[in-house]
Image (cartoon, rainbow, N blue to C red; front, top):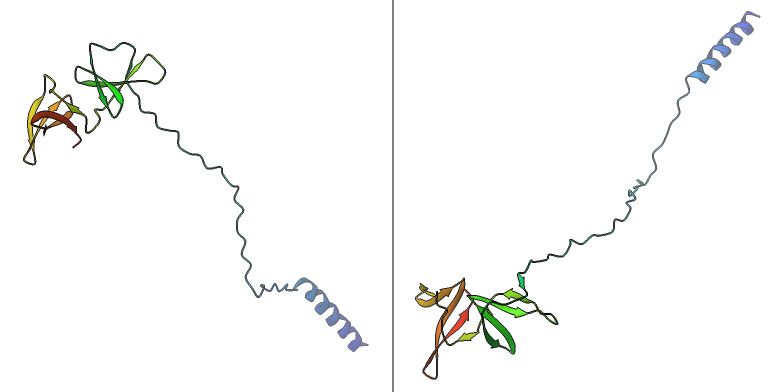
Length: 142
């Protein structure tokens, strides 16, 4: 009877201790699993277009008309203008490279760059060119 009681007490002790001391073993998968985070596509936004301000006038000062490549350029006080299409306004433009003139502007100053003689007036460079013995001035970009 003592033996039976001893076995019963020991069985209860070990049974209750096993219930409370169970260890759960978690095994990792053989192949690693990679999860890629989901990203919501963002619409690509282009930068706004660059608008270069232009000087536009309705009435030209006293001017001369110079045709270059079939386009009339209006020249007044060192500034070149072209007419805006289908309007009565004129826009300030740079002097087109290669345009020839018979005379220099009144305020042109002589300058030497790389052993070449140029004339500068209102930021426009002119170079002397002789055509059939006649001296002309052509617009150059430096």
